[in-house]
Length: 450
Image 1 (tube, one colour):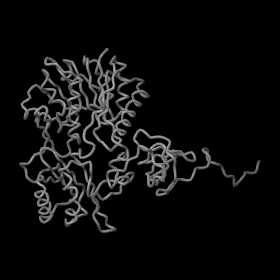
Image 2: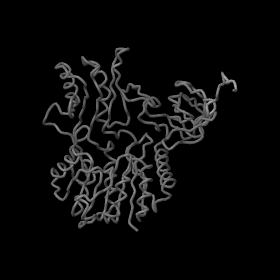
Image 3: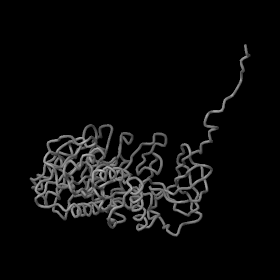
């Protein structure tokens, strides 16, 4: 019998594992090109680096935010050799705040980057190019954001309240006293908010703050414990000074302190007023939103005798302007409270040719009662994961024209494959610059049946 061999050491099947790069390490890098999200890409010792705040051709010093496998995420700390495209960042918090990742690029270059991202996705995933590229739909470069969530956290170790926005690549909070992308009515509230919150007696019970500007200005405070009478008085005085509504979010749904107060926004070209509550989805860029609705109506070309379907209708942002032009609008949304809100908005604007339904739009369209009569045209505005199950059945509804509003070019391209398979042609496409200073891309596409 052979004597057993002891003490052998076996190499793992993948070879030796490379040492991980520690967070905080600084590295000098040359940027090869830009990624689809606007980050610079560099290659070093078999790893791919994605660097916030870097441009193609630059030599930079980057600080590691995180690493996994052969991918390293970092942010630019210093630029040794700058691109001709680089501009000074307009915001003092650039590079630390995670909100605006491409403000070192001139606005026209931001638009070009987003256009390339959309074109690349449509070409690579769907193998198509629109018959016509639309000009970018754009508005104000700064001062456009009418809604913002402000992070609030009690640091028990330092015994201080942190108020601001999340940092790039981490859960740290960057103290913010001025934000150039906020609409002007929210600027003084943002600057005075930290000092006011620090006066409250239970800072450890505070969650976050949301700011709104529409037909009224509002401040929403999320709190995890009841507020004292003194704290409520501080909050009410702050909001009164800024002529803002005060909303509180403890247990249950957000509620205004004054029950008679309501929030909303106008779609001025159509003389429409839409009510909403904190937690409802609304587009943060009012100017681009109006331009987007106008372009969608122009591309869809609805006729007075037509029946039109609006999927993922939300509060009625598209459905109500459509209802002014057609015989009937059927609007469908997955969230029951939004369906009710949209129906109330239609009624309050004296539009009685709209019908609203709740349905799970992540599932295939079944033989729903609202779908049986078919539609001349369809408009859909899905969330980031797209509308694959919905578009699989669109041809069966008889729609000859389809406008797809997308907040994710990747899922738009994926869904385009299915629409082309059903016999639709991509007639027109273009970007919507809903979030200037960020790499986030929104797009609109027009499909027509062959």
